[in-house]
Image 1 (cartoon, rainbow, N blue to C red):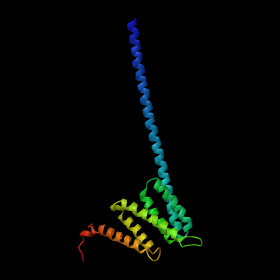
Image 2 (image 1 turned 90 degrees about the vertical axis):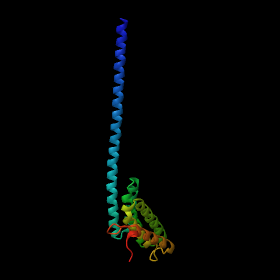
Image 3 (image 1 turned 90 degrees about the horizontal axis):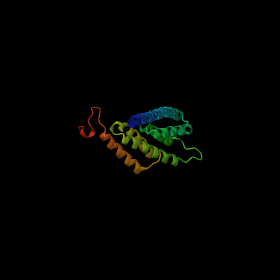
Image 4 (image 1 turned 135 degrees about the vertical axis):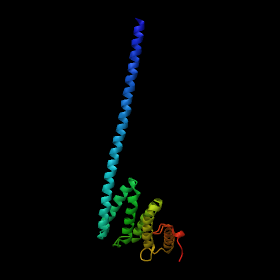
Length: 193
């Protein structure tokens, strides 16, 4: 009789152990599925936010083109904040160039400090340049675009900063020398003359 009792307890112990293991496996599987669901939901939200930010940027471009600078600026800034939050430098860089251009070109109005606009334009364009510089050779054309806007900002027509203009022009020359020609050869390998 004792032997039967021991065998029953062992069987019960094994069955209980198997049940606990099964419950733990289900719990782990459920947790993984829940994490995947949350990640999928976050991805969908991010994709939606990106689409909204792209539309907001397009609206800002339209308003900018119509000369409605004060309406366009907050749209650019809103889109930019979303692009940066989502770590979408590909969109943020272009938005920064647009914002910098707007701030540089916006006419000064009564009570408005144009110097502050130039400072903000410089910050936006320098940030765009860095984003595209970090993007490597594929982003050189966009880096050049940011540099050209900085060149315009530092020109006598706008901020008139000869020292900064000289640095930007040197950076443009170096970038142009590094950019491949139509045949794919770097400027340093091209025949002179």
